Amino acid sequence: MTSTTNVAICTNQLPYTWNGNNYTAAGTYNVTLIGTAGCDSIATLNLSVNPTLTSTTNVAICTNQLPYTGMATVTPPPELIM
Image 1: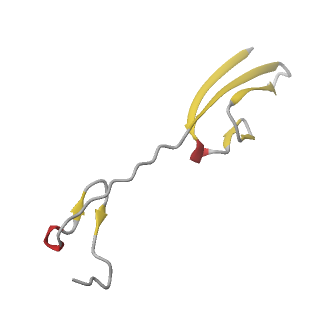
Image 2: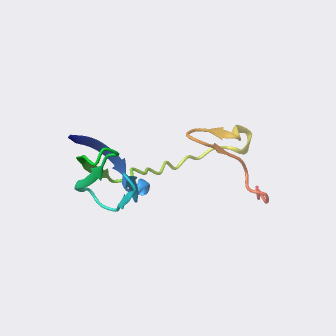
Image 3: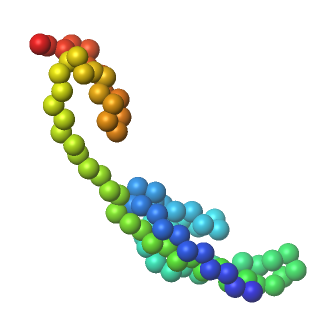
């Protein structure tokens, strides 16, 4: 018996664990599994690793516009100098 698992992850999700094994890079991996009746099964993992996407947005606001509610809430630092 054979089975194939296709997985796409980001680099920050490495290592990827599958069938008790850790994988640290994209690739095709095969493992042989032995069932309770002694029959062998071949399981194939097709692992795709995509780069982690990041972005930076610079925002200028006035103190009366705080808290800013863009992608996350930003509040003034403990010592806000005006």
